[in-house]
Image 1: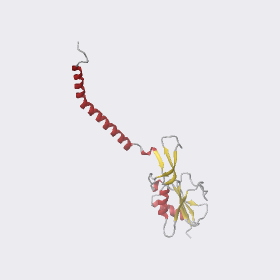
Image 2: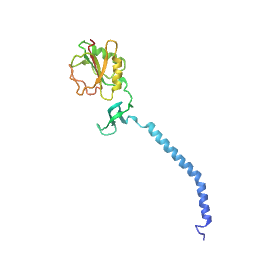
Image 3: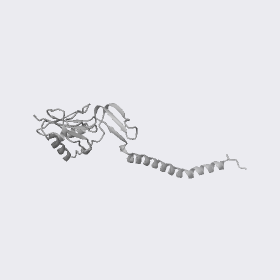
Image 4: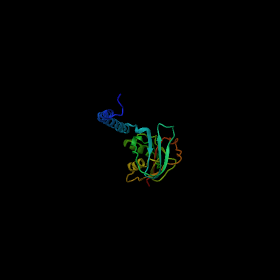
Length: 192
């Protein structure tokens, strides 16, 4: 009988390992490439629409909502943050134009001008609860860049428009109420 610990069996084991090493190295290398490719593909094709993130520069509140979680569930952090979210396209902004000038038709004229610039998601123009001097854009938190774009769009030589905070409570209008879905309110005030 031969002893399994004799020199020949060790030599056979080494030969077996030497023969398997290139094959094993190829297999491990192929698995590593497949793993890396899988991670890259997941990052590329991952549905970026799963989360809705609003991040604003400055000392602010950042809210992240996972669309796959319970409705209303969100994570909120406070502190200094950088702006990373994309600016909404004009057609994505739900807005209403209010006439606070006391001049008939000003809200409708402004609404039509904004529609021509792509702001198509508008509520019916209405009369503001009170007459005011100067025009303003009031957008919800997280839409400061959209507000700035509206201000720039509406400002001209005879009408300076300012950005203001969105009201905590939506004002009552002469005809009806402002829908809760509105993201920005444009108030056209008196120019003089």
